[in-house]
Image 1 (spheres, rainbow, N blue to C red):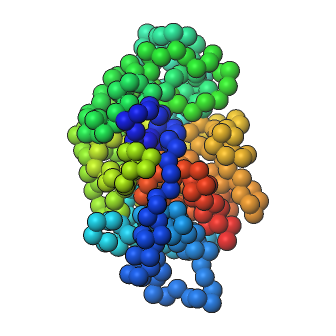
Image 2 (image 1 turned 180 degrees about the horizontal axis):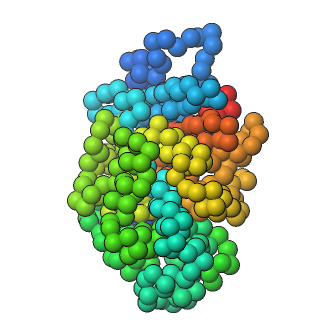
Image 3 (image 1 turned 45 degrees about the horizontal axis):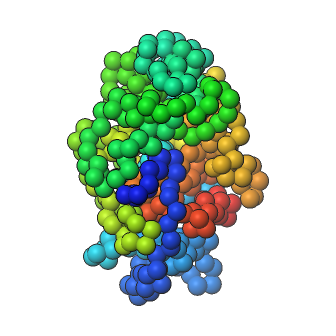
Length: 391
């Protein structure tokens, strides 16, 4: 899930609006340097760690309040990193491997549940949505009889973005509002289809809203419970959860998340909010290490039979997400500067951005920052993942 706070524009969860870098970045950097928050006591000046340096730069140069990382090397050794401050008001330290809102990293969890149902022969990838939700998808150029489950998971359905609905034009006004999935879908169905099903690739959170509704219809259980039972509990993700209706807080130690409500405005604490607006597309809360564990288990065959994992890894070009990026069924492949690719997804929720994934040879890296950077700063977050996996 991706979002931007703005009273003057409507921006889908899959994108962030244009914002200027924090003018107080240098002051912030000086403050955390003075407290020693950027550098661990054991850091060696002779042999600087490239991952720590990347996080330090995101704080010092880009004005990001906090950056966190969890990195596992080829030998299975894991190291966690922090930079910046966890609370701009109090100057509290960043909790190691703290919880964050994982945004669209929820999508591969939702996709895995759908593909498990495919393996159980309860869902067919190439069946139309109307097979499971008859008559639900109808609108201008929208017809659930011609959109398949595969196209939902692959973002090739042409469904419009529900976050473009007028209700999200003034985001602060709905920060604590509870949305039923059908309320969100109605906002999408009032718009015209983006293109004919299968004609192209375009990211839309509405696809995973519908996928979540299919899960609920087929299983008879809430999507959050299915994600919990089939994935979180199964592989022991102890710090990951799907918020229950009405929840607005983050359960465990976490850095606070911040956004600007206007391009040049101050950073506003957006840690607490109702994530029902993200639902099966972006509600999950997790940690870098838990996300690394999830993607490692997924690519290692612990969650899906070989046939369904192969379908998940069958990709189409998604260059809008970055050079050489390809999208499968809720899973992306991203080229590495040192060769090969890493598999993951990434997510942005208000106050947080998460990036990372795993390689075929067992490397894993997850990086989280406590605001949604744009432009060059956004690219430097992506580069930090590359540094962590290629160092």
